[in-house]
Image (cartoon, rainbow, N blue to C red; front, side, top):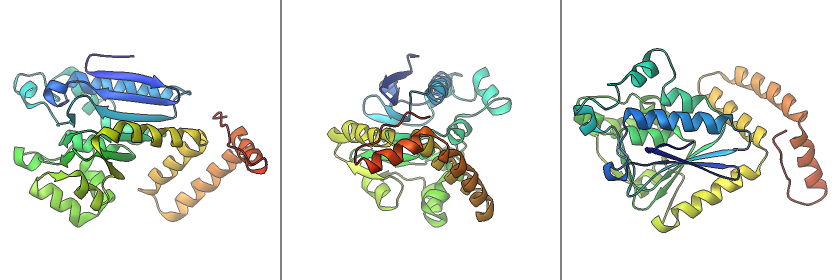
Length: 263
């Protein structure tokens, strides 16, 4: 699956989704959002895929909503696809927050507005030292509506989230790392290789366990401890019955790397 606005590549157990409007710093249009959602759904439903990487072509990760397209009636919120997403179907944020496969944002440049929210929707954020991030909705008379309002306080705390939201200023990658918003900052020329290394390491672990761990943590954001513990006991019981668990034990006894099949 590949569209003009989103390039979808598969390399072994890793799906790489590249936002592909480099002349607009990969600013979102309705068509791009639809293409990205289709690619995410396809990768999530593909048993051979264990990790999803999202990045941008050219100098930007995603510069947010394409205001030029918006003014011309082609932006998000103007088409039937967006009306469906907001009224009768899933949004990009609800889709990304519902899938169990781990996601990595490989932030190669500007991640602003909706692009900033897209990075937050990913489980792990790896940033180039050339990346800049920020939420500037208040400078346009708007508020975040693609997950950032819910995610940012949970990622970095209330006070720091308020600072970012209310000031509407940009931060560089090192500041984002200092406040815990990104996992690691690497030299720009090392971003692709570092992202691949992280994705490969995750993909080498038992995929069912990784996905269940993600679901367990996600449920923990909105449930009490006892409820989350009950889910953990249930999930652990299911995992004990898997071939991957038996392979994990065998590989430990035999002092070798495990080869997990997701079964």
